[in-house]
Structure formats: structure tokens, C-alpha cells
Image (cartoon, rainbow, N blue to C red; front, side, top):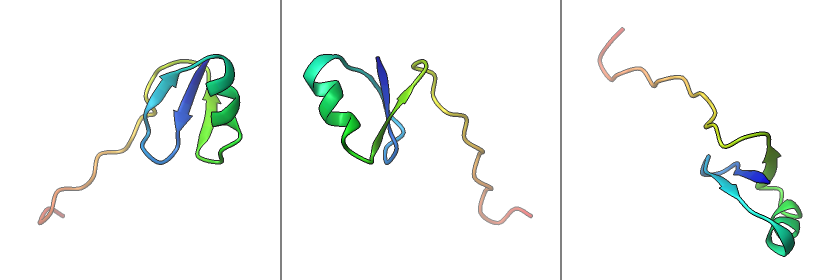
Length: 48
């Protein structure tokens, strides 16, 4: 099962006891696949 670390944006494939422990943390959530969330690009400095 894939879990997403909300702080870093990294997705991990974990199973068993580790999965159970990670899900107790508010920093992780189950995701459907390993696809990275789409982020909007930051505007470049000095451009308007």
C-alpha cells in the first residue's frame, strides 16, 4: 500500500507493521498510487 508523507511529499510503498505505525501519525495518509501530486510552479523572482 502506498502512503504519502504530507511534510515532504514523498510516497512510499509499505506493508505490515510499518504501515500500521505510519498511519497512526498525522503526517502520513494512504494514497491510491505512487503518482506525485501536481504542484503549481512558483513565480520567478522579478517577473510580473
